[in-house]
Length: 142
Image (cartoon, rainbow, N blue to C red; front, top):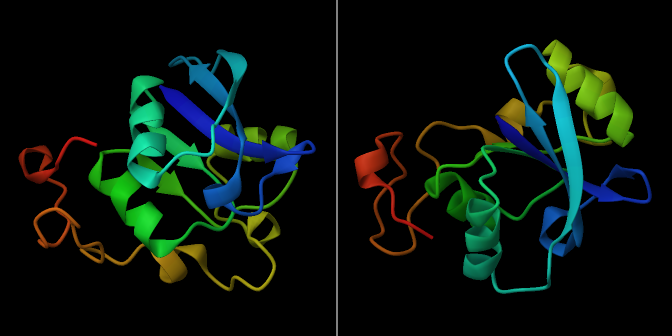
């Protein structure tokens, strides 16, 4: 599984939309991993998403993210874990332990990242104006 975490000065980048670096972790079933850093060029949203897909990212862990960009990324099939704060090492450890939902990893001012972001069928596809579906046949390729 490939997990990307946005970084800025050793911490989670506070806003995905303006993040310029990610660390990609290729994690195996035994939780062993290899990592590498990649640059995220300042590109239009569609191109940024194509870049993530080209890197074969399955999960994106980030700080805040604009609603429109988050919807486009989810529609493309990438799982997003937003509104996360902390150092790279502690966030990776929490992700691997399944404890990212703890309050200590939430961005300041975010009472519940699941409530803030993860409402079922909340995203509307900008191409066809349909609600996002978990059915991959309904997803457009970005």
